[in-house]
Structures are given as structure tokens and as C-alpha cells.
Image (cartoon, rainbow, N blue to C red; front, side, top):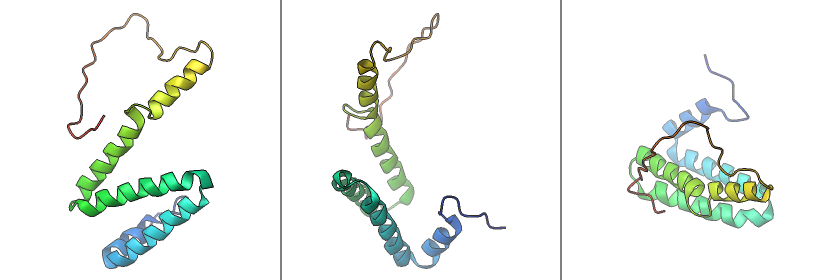
Length: 123
């Protein structure tokens, strides 16, 4: 039994299209991405196109789709954790908020946190 589409995304349709018509899948995927970028505020469209270009280059230059997915996942984490990323910006906002502690402390508990970096990470 097929599950109904969630938020307009029909997984079964896209999976069947990718299986039976890879070129058609890519064309439709590109059209959906372009439409999403066009609906974004005009001042963000250039950045979104640049980001999509980077994603497409990873997909184009990586033979294995799973490896491409892992690399794109790494790009997302880089955007969150690197200098000037989401975490830095949230930290700055909390400082502007007037005395809100930037990192909540848990009283009475201490631990040594070891930093394990992804060898492919650039920050």
C-alpha cells in the first residue's frame, strides 16, 4: 500500500522516475530546485544558486551517491559549526539579548570533551 504524499512530496513517484528515467528525474529535480530558489527573497537568490552549484559539483564529481551524500552532509555541518556559521550567529544573538548566558551550564557535572575532527573538514 502506497503512503500518501507528505507536503506535496511523493517519494514513490520520485523513486520510480529515478529508476526508470534518470535524465527525466534530473530535469524535474533541477526544475523543482529552480522554482524553490525563485520563490526565495530576491536578496537571497544569488547565494542559494551558489550553494546549489556547490551541491551539484559534489554530486557531479563523486561517483558514489552515498559518498556524495556524506560530503553534502559535511557541508551542512560546516555551515553550522565553522567561524561565521549558524552557531556563531546564534551565540552573537544571545549576547545581544542582554545577559542571556551564551552556553547554559549544568551545575555539578563536569566532563572532558574530546574534539574529533572530520579529516575532510575545512574549518
